[in-house]
Amino acid sequence: MTERTPILDILTHVFLILGILVTGFPIYVALVAATLTPQEVNGLPMPMFFGDQLLVNLQETWSRADLGLQLFNSAVQAIGITIGKVAISILSAFAIVYFDFRFKMTAFWIIFMSLMLPIEVRIVPTYEVAANALTPFIWLGEVLGLDDLASWIAGERVSFDVKVSLLNSYAGLIFPLIASATATFLFRQFFLTVPNEMCEAAKVDGAGPMRFLADILLPLSRTNIAALCVILFIYGWNQYLWPLLVTTDPSYSTVVIGIAKLMPSPEAVPEWNLAMTAALIAMAPPVLVVVFLQRLFVRGLVESEK
Amino acid sequence: MRRVTFDGRWLPYLLLFPQLLILLWFFFWPAAQALYQAFTLASPFGGYAEWVGFENFTDMVSQPEYHKAIWVTIVFSAFTTALSLGLGLLFALFADRVLRATDAYRILLIWPYAVAPAIAGALWTFTLDPHSGVVAFALKTVLDWGWNPELSSFDAMVLVVFAAAWKQVAYNFVFFLAGLQSIPRSVIESAAMDGAGPLRRIRDIILPLLSPTTFFLIVLNVVYAFFDTFGIIHVTTEGGPGDATTILVYKVFRDGFIGLDLSASAAQSIILMVVVIALTVFQFRFLERRVHYAG
Image (tube, rainbow over all chains, first blue to last red; front, side):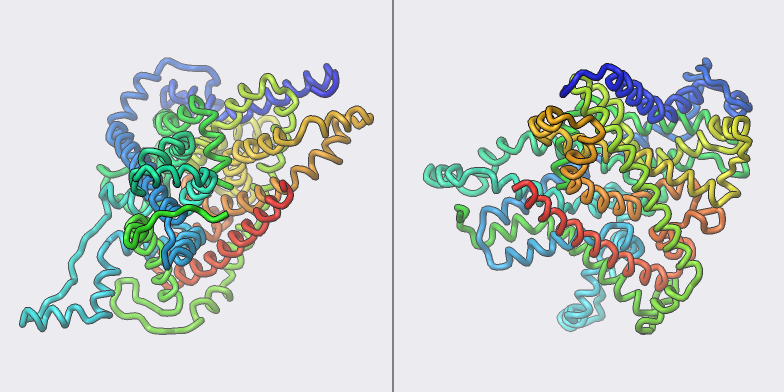
């Protein structure tokens, strides 16, 4: 502290606590709602203190929305996206930093340009690819005349018009979301700070590139990887638009989608107590990750956005 | 300094293969498709597509609904960015003052970042629900404000801005706090010795030194408001009432998936892509400047 200003200090704490209260207010309301009966929730005004229906609401929400399965699906999606992004980003950053090859800059620009194609601006065609994952290959086949070639070889009409749908599958939830330019840049940036001598020493000792990656680079990047994983887990868990499109079968629905479906509709009596119970459960995993891994989270956030 | 590299003819391509495969498959192919669809008129059930040049774009740009969506997006992004940047900076300035307690305050202020936009929307829909929400009730009894985001465009906009900013304050707070804590204490202390009070120091020293962070955050906040708030809009207002909260991204989704107007949706996608490209270039320009400041 630069100077002694007791009044300003008190004001600081008062303001911060006020901020925390306002920030936490909707959670408090949701927690209270989760313990009330439907009649109490819809009463005007709603009681502002806890009731005794928490277990009843939990049980009802759990069975109604099939929360166990949805939480599992969310976990699969979040963990799949995290592992996938980290793995393919490390490999591509390694290739770009530690090899000289002809199309290095091309590869770099392809990765960079993907930053400009967020899912929101290409939803319809991405959905079409997910609905039939082979679309690009069928097109390629037509353009290159592979259909005709195969028909000529086989002596009868052959078509590559096979349908592989990623809709309602874990692959569909994960694969279209695992490319990552930012993670690649993050690892590239980090690899560039690793001294040249490390690589030289490894080469002198006769280690090949993969050995160097596994035994030297990965152990050195441990903290970076962990920090990035925290951010990516939250990113994966909180996905909404893509799972909304790609999962129509409730058995592949993620919990965030499930909650949105539990929101009261204009036609029925609102069951806010259930919707809020479910919302609290759905947000618990990422929030707990932030609270318990605060330092890693902040590090990951600041680094991955740079 | 030249990097030491490994020899390998095929290995680098093999290492890049998974990333490039996913990118070409799920990013560039769909983007090319969007480009194609934007210049053709297709039947929603596939098959036949006719080349129409810029017709989809001119149709789109002349539609009053599209003008409205642009306007709604600008209002929504401006207010969300201003509110979340302002509060984030204010909290960071205060938290930076109390160094010992910063960790505790930080945890208590940053957790909303981890809440999914859709769930943030659900929480605020409930709190501000005109029939059973506590805040809506308070507004009615205390201010005699017949709050109803289902009917009033203004109230609906307040609802989505509030939910979007609530989530984003945490994010700005983290970056502002990191920026503040990287300002050398000696600079602040010497200003204090020269007799500059806290407000004067904020205005003449801290804010100018924070300006690279602020520029960077403005771009990221605009990107957030433009593209990451789909879940909030979908859960709270579904773009209504009327089109009062239909931002551009939501319109792409609605025209494409509910209206099944692929060409219109694709044309809008392409326009949005141009926006993202502009924002990305802008962001990297500023990043370069930021490196310059530091060095």
